[in-house]
Image (tube, rainbow, N blue to C red; front, side):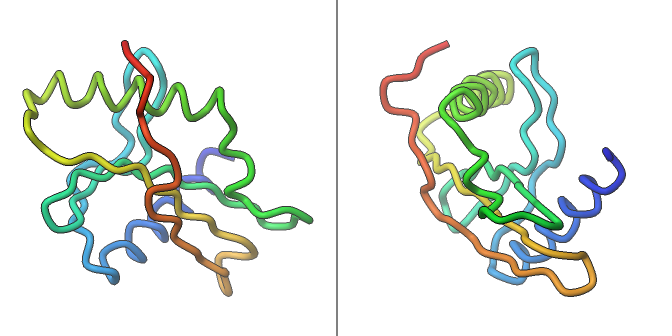
Length: 120
């Protein structure tokens, strides 16, 4: 399953590059979990969660629930602290991929959630 997930993340990275994002890092691991993609969109540092479903009656992004959001935010704060990043705008996006790799339906949800009220 992890191999398929990696293929979807590669597809998401390509999609982001095609939409003028600069990929900084992929699969950054922290004690709170993994950040799928860290990118820049202009001057904004963007943490991108990739969700994919080959066959499903619901949209992949719907699986980004509160508990997952909390882990992503905590992991992103660890990332920012570990890299010494300061005074940078941060955003959380979700790339939602539905269908087979050969003919995927890809959507980008910018500013899918925010870190207001979350602390390490």
